[in-house]
Length: 149
Image (cartoon, rainbow, N blue to C red):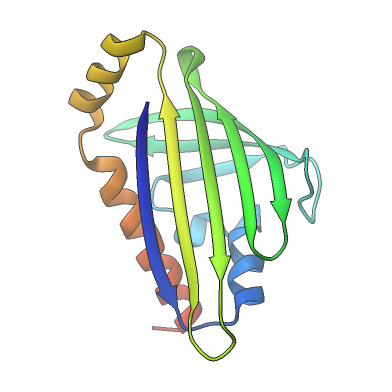
């Protein structure tokens, strides 16, 4: 299993950040590896909602079927995804704000590939630090989008 953690402070109201990150049609505006989304089962998103997303990393596009397994608006959302070759992922959004300061957005992405230890080694060789870089780039795009910079 590989895990990526990223965190950013955004000078925007918590509710605005929440609405943006939980709107599948806005993924194209901030997620760097996002290519398309389809078959969103329910909007606004509630627990059990699903969607299909095409992502692109290191020259390869692939599909992930996401299910929203936990949602506590406007502070927490957890997605579980199933990708190609029995790969799995878990994404966690955690948002907090104290009222006067920025909204803190914490992002966690855990992904598991089949093949146990060998699969994990292959993931590190193929993907390397790309996932961490892309997570930080995505959060920077979200910040720029919401702060109007």
